[in-house]
Length: 315
Image 1 (cartoon, rainbow, N blue to C red):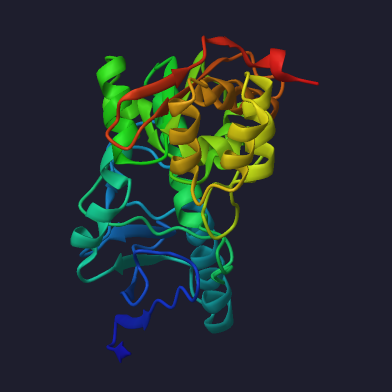
Image 2: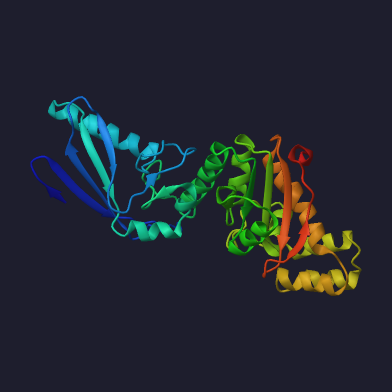
């Protein structure tokens, strides 16, 4: 903590607890100076805090990437403190994160058009374990930027391999590509109320199997492949009991896939079909055309559904 006549500066080390967050352990600093009388509270990006450069985000281009909720909390604090000492609530607030520009390279900020550092996010100041709130917020902002840019096709992918594979299939700008990771539900539910004309969901066989089985969080620690159910899917597309039993006792989704392939069973197509149904239900009444694409670990195409209106997926 540091205090002079016209400013005060303080810092705190971010403790993300069990929540996967690139800012865990980072020093977050705030400096407050007396502001111009009548100007109110103004925000500035210090070292390691990004600046918005594209439309579609909650803040206009040119503003420091300090989201509305943290701004509101800081403004309320300034108003309260100013009232106690009988002065106008005029203050310049600068937020900085030493090393934040390097940390931001591990976030989606560059794709969202936030340059120079991190975003200051949050709603309460309290971390919810395993909420992955920052990632889900970035997914939502990615959709917002795509829509504000007039794009009509977004592709949500589970990782770099599936994203590269989607790029080979479609000539999409970077802002159309949403790295959703395991949070397919976070993407689809947001697209329900913020629709685009076409939605592609792409990923590997294991994660798309979880989606096919109704899971919208694909993380290995929070969902797993139901091999008995996968064996039933194999039966639906022609697998005999011997092959189905081998699939049910498989040690991994990849092994189950290979068993099916060796027996001439197109398990990937059946999984893609069922994954489409789950995704379409999550989109609900959104008038979007949806497709599912499944890739192998090298990014080769395994299965693909045709684009269909997602409303068809409702029960």
